[in-house]
Length: 183
Image (cartoon, rainbow, N blue to C red; front, top):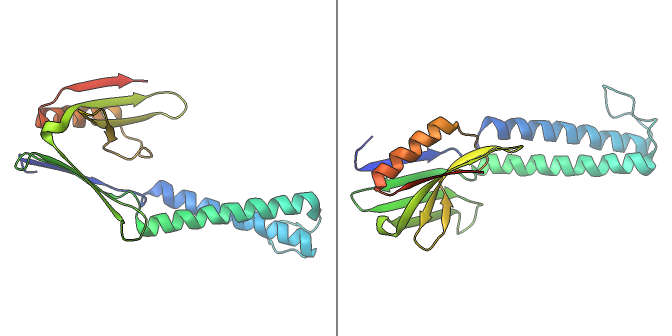
């Protein structure tokens, strides 16, 4: 690592959690969809269980609906993984006195999201720990105009001790104060 540049790579959608969720949603959705079709046609399309006994109205229709929804979400997750949504990097350069945040979005002419801020516009860094049912930990870049930009995606569960070390390292590198916030 160069002492005048810090670069942090961001994984994005291509992670184990996304793969597992996509597979589970797709298989469960396919099961529900086939069970709904079996109840309509009175013919068993599933090998693992007997589904012709299910009444089409209302259970079969509900199973078709939930199966279609789960398959749709599975396809959305598959496309997110293929497009690698949210991946990119954070770059902090003392040579240019610039912070660059680069992320990939949905395909199109504005696929790459590029944010650039000068060091003089940075007020401080916030080390955020949220506890409770959906715990998370993140570092926020706070600008002088009071905008707070998260440096890591919210879905990534990060170790609080490692994140705190990163926050301290970045605050020292940028020469800005570090604020700790526990919610």
